Amino acid sequence: MGIVLSRNVSPQQKFDRNAELFRIADLSKVWIVTDVYEHEAQFIKPGMTAKAALFHQGKVFNARVTDVLPVFDPATRTLKVRLEADNPGYILRPEMFADVEFLIAFPSAVTVSADAVLDSGLRKTVFVDLGDGLFEPREVETGWRFGNRVEIMKGLRPGERIAMSSTFLIDSESRLELAAAGIVGTLSKDPVCGVDVSINKAMKYGRKSTYQGKTYYFSSDECKQKFDQNPHNYIKE
Image (cartoon, rainbow, N blue to C red; front, side, top):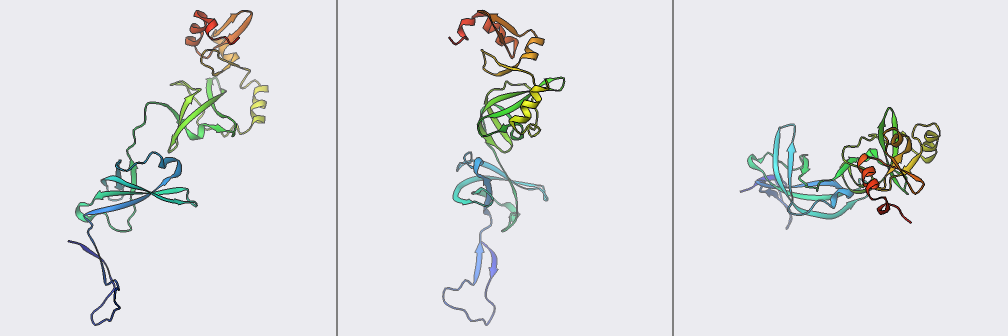
């Protein structure tokens, strides 16, 4: 059983051999072709489940990825992904638009908005909220990116508050001016976890220790306790 999609012949009309007279398709099962950004395509694999939605009709269809096509569009920076879906009631029709949502499971991780990461090309920085209008620049290491979320592999702890957009500090000169004005303050490296620490904030909360005549500053009470118990474990000779 099929549905006539197009007719290219009329009664009494002459036609050539191999001419297409009718185009007939079985629409009980359809293909859906969607565009996926290049940095997201690595997470899309054949066999994955997805949902295709026609929001103006309030309809959602279960779909399955059948192929990630090796066709790259340099203008939109996207790859084509083909899905297959059952089409009860023939609601999905050729040339219609649908919104596709892929169901992807990621391991537990610290993630931030991509806009919060300032990438200079040499280092990636986020700005940690110290309270009282103060922000501390913190170098981070990033992992996977999906949509507008970026994994932070090193440099942030769960629960820390950061600036949602780093565009207000766009270059090194701006950061130096803020430091000179006392907005950011002098930074030190926490010898336990390795993150940059505002000396002013560490002193405010008593997170400092002296060992062999040198003062060390810490980003948390936990790091200070670890250092105080075994300082020689964290000092590089």
